[in-house]
Image (cartoon, rainbow, N blue to C red; front, side, top):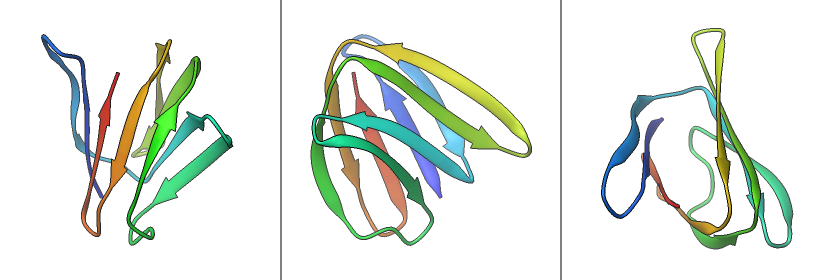
Length: 76
């Protein structure tokens, strides 16, 4: 799945991943390929991206996630 994590002034990550864990206001959620489309508010925590056996972590204070059929965009 294509993933973009961005701030107002810069792109933190743009590429393809296997899964991404996000800290939603309602609780943590894992997004995989072909996830149901949704838009959600994020709370303070950590975004964890897994791709090719590696893991990247992005601490956040708040944000939004937009999950589409083929692309996920996170604004923090």
